[in-house]
Length: 422
Image (tube, rainbow, N blue to C red; front, side, top):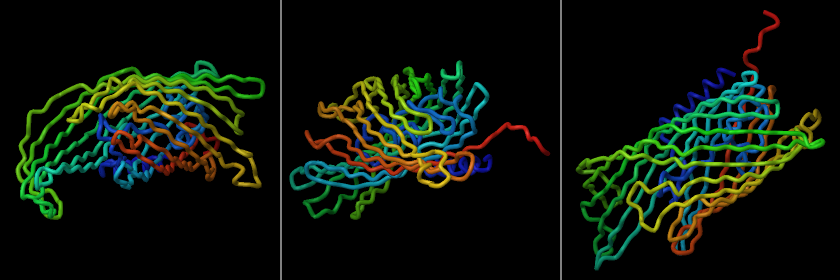
């Protein structure tokens, strides 16, 4: 188990060094980019709800769940996204891959602890526009990359067998690069002038935040009633911005090479991490089935655009509604492997908080998934499929259809057990 954790950490370090680009969405142009799903693949497959927690899977969205673990758990997951972007005139396709999380959970009697790392937000857009100016064409390219990562550590305590509380503390860090390049073509032949200009804004983020959680369960006759709540208060993290103004050489092929760079005066600002509250409830039967719903409110109106974006863009408080659950035909079957598979499904609908052209950008998705038991000690591989849509083509906006394939592994083992025989 320990060797597997070290292998996972090595993979994480290698992937971080390659600087992931976890999105290709033009909507990541605004604010700090697209905010990523902060849970594991098991919960993503159930519409993203974190209401349900058990003893062999980490629930990264609710820190109160850590003390429910009965075995040391190491979990790692990633997602490949295929997207189609459609406007009134054009259609484009793109894909991206992201390591979603890597974390360890450790049971400590009535306590439970967890630590890990995951990407909080992702930026990865490329936008091209052209405007006719007399016999010439003035073109502008916008592109950005980067994001904010979150390293966390949390602790949970079981006040009663059916009541757990917990909190996790996070260090947020990362860089976001935004670039704007302006160039002029000739009379329409497509050859570029020798020089253009590019403005580059690089922002480095760092700071702390924390999240609290509560879980309460009770019996209703022969069924289990699950309830959960989480709250993340508003915090501020430091944002150090450096601006560069470049003279660039633009080749006929479209490649851009920097000829001269001049650094401009940078600014240090605080980025508001908005408060977030969620509450969920569900009912089910242990090792058989569960169905639940969850509501999340995020104070995204506190966000702002830290770059030169249009005045027609802004933010509002957002809400997310999700429903999902699982079904296991027969968890202890000796005759059929597929009877022991966990089948999951869910649906979510959310107002993302982004407002463009006075239109709220909404996002909804359907999800399916399955958990496949592997070997001993309840180790399992979890697969989830998600199809969704964000935005719409009205008022010159973009409709984004996306399909996510997520794969995760949950390794379980017993630690701190005294040997009976030497």
